Amino acid sequence: MCVGPNQNGWTQARGLVVKTLLLIGGAILVKRLTKSTTRWDHARIVSRSLSGEKFSKEQASRDPDNYFNLRWLSCPAAEMVDGSKVLYFEQAFWRTPNKPYRQRFYMVKPCPKEMKCDVEVGCSIYLFPFPECFKLSTYAIRDAEEYKNFCDRPKDQRPQPEEVIGDIAEHLTTVHLKRCERGKRCLYEGSTPSDGFPNSWNGATFCTSEFAVMKNNEIHTWDRGYDDDGNQVWGVKEGPYEFKPAPSSSFVDMFSPLNLPPQSMDKRIEGSFVLQE
Image 1 (tube, rainbow, N blue to C red):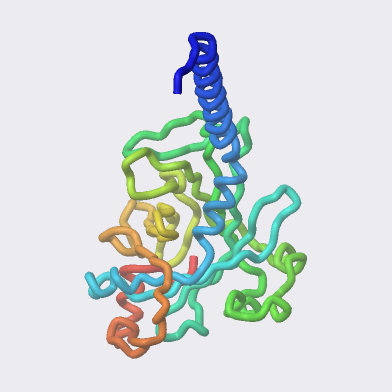
Image 2: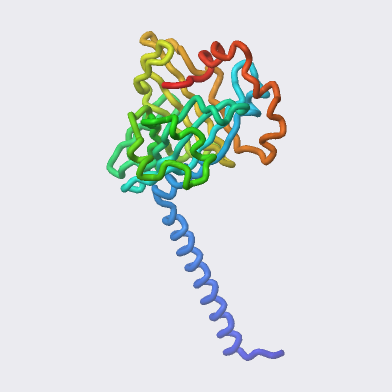
């Protein structure tokens, strides 16, 4: 079909207009998507990553002398007036999930915009505002016995949010988290200040904590206690515990040797993992 010069010029002009509109629309969309991830969005992502059932089974299989197969269980428990998320957390041996030896409340919230977050990177401490910096704080529970297996119960059989808020007891630790640099396996990472937080378990005077949210909802956590002379008196020395989301067949190998605490369990716990702060 023949096309006249005027018609051909109109077709080209229309094509340019369409391309221009597409480019402008794409730029606006990218800008909106970039702006859509707020500090609270990042806090919600971390809260979701903390939630669920996770195990250190793979790590215990690789290095049974230093790591137990532990069960991590966490779920939303309440929301504070300022929007902070409160999660209930408990830890137990995989074989005895109904007998947690560690129970805490996690509170996740962004750092205030005006706050200079202390974020440890390598051996340096940077003091400047991070737009995606937020706090992960742990608190003791006023009546821990009442909260055992909280996440395993139907919601109407759990302490309700207003009760949860009333049962938040002493502050234990706070980790300032920030987004990981490109190329790293983690999504968010952080640590306590270098001088840690007060702790008196097993002769310690202070404890430190390192925390990382990995891809696929995996959590790495490394808690250690030190005495006045800087000697490590509790906590694993080889590296952080690695908790991976529970496989669908969690109960297939319940009586695996990895899930049976040895007779010298107390001594191993003393050297690898703290039971209570």
